[in-house]
Length: 270
Image (cartoon, rainbow, N blue to C red; front, side):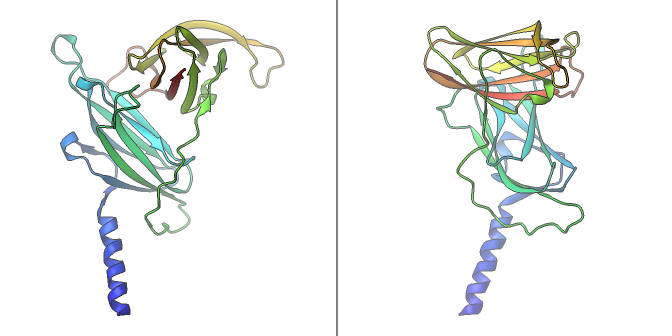
């Protein structure tokens, strides 16, 4: 009886592992052949990336939902042009997993419309991320329960400014309805070649001025100094919860070039 119970446990564990597709880096997945779960295992200091199709015809983009703090995932969107300069119905998103330090966690990749918080995602991929120290053997891969709380978002205040290395990956913004607005500033070191751009839905209005200059306290300096920034202005007109993706990228991007910085802002209009 004990042998039968042990055999059943081993079989259940094997089936659990079999559900996760092992990622070695460079894999590409079509929308009609997406894996339900993937396993990304790598040593500290390395990266793994996959490429996923995006349905731009219905404005769906891939985003990452971090289940715990510390996991680093970057997503770069590549929009292709069709005949006549129109946007092609399909695009590509490159998802990059970064092994900064040892961690064993889960990340969810969601294919959904930015700004639409009520409609369920078109697709969900559950990612098991394992980053291990080089000097130690790889830890055993054990399926973990999903933590209940997502990664904490940084609250963005009106007139707040961020230096480039202080910009959070995720932010939370609250705006009053009936024309209420929020202004904040993001550093723009090279306004001639780079700019901040916004990807958002139609429930709010987002405007960006990439040629602004403000005086602010800089670490290491006693007095305020002038810095070149981009002014981000968000206006709300009716109660909603939506998302805005801000990307700092080259004005004339080169083929395959990725944004230098990306921040996902969750906007609540009350």
